[in-house]
Length: 394
Ligand code: ATP
Ligand code: MG
Image (tube, rainbow, N blue to C red; front, side, top):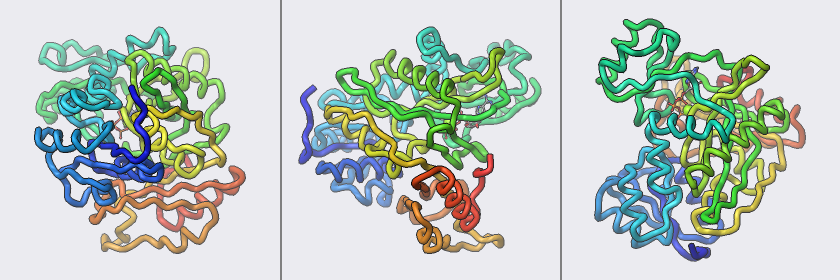
């Protein structure tokens, strides 16, 4: 594939915050950008040179995006895989439709992880696929208590029901309209972590050290990214597994793989949870703490530019800013006190330009960097207190 140089236009399917940060990275390098998103006020559409405002499957919209763009990427995994395949008929698309199709379906995703287990060294949680009444009846008791997850369209804990008994499982599957699901055994998690890698069209791969993630109510709250945030041996295993998972499907672009840390027979063990075929919330610290961010690498990979091995220059803590902090104790809307937060050293505030704050909606994030971990932790604690953010003490 020929290198696409700055001055060309890069396209992205989806106009959310990940698309917005992709647009920022592409524009800084001198590219023009095109975003396809139906929403007139989408975070990425607002900052892009071109905004194709149609549905993701609209043939005219897809044609317009392909006409504008020299290469196309995606910022969310639920983009219809056929749309990516239609675009791929005339333009380089990274990641490709088949890779995105695996990531959008937990059944295929788990099959891919299992197929990789021999080379990745990491398996997935014990689980069963439920598509029919017979499969529901055949579920082993050992999978309970468990989490029933819809195979498709889940994010931020949506489309998931925790079940303790077979009766609850049946009720939950009925409530989910009996769509294809995966029942996963509930594991006692000691921690969660994720790994970001970027892979080029030529198979070259670079990546970041794994980060440790804290979720609150099924949504990422805090990311710890500094040496020692995970035991070194465990981090090395997670990194190797992520590379195997990317390699085996010929992935091109930026990939994030999420893992659980559990107690195994011989000490700490890893379980692979899911993958995101795009930059990830747990990689946002790379903007302020690394010389190349995950969005820079997304741009490099899709444009066929060389992939530099990124270097983290500061320890970092990332705090997610959900819509909840836009409401006071009485439920009245307010603006968080940004001035106090910005007065602290090493705070990097990112707001996504969403006009309406809603509880559990990702409105922005705050990355704290510093010369040493102790100062980063102290500042992050101050920010969490000022803004009322959870998850820092886990
Ligand atoms: P996102 O796409 O936002 O990462 P999601 O909705 O796709 O989330 P998962 O990553 O499957 O959902 O699960 C969300 C969180 O729920 C996990 O990060 C973890 O904290 C918890 N969880 C999920 N599966 C299990 C499990 N089998 N055992 C214990 N906890 C789990
Ligand atoms: Mg997840």
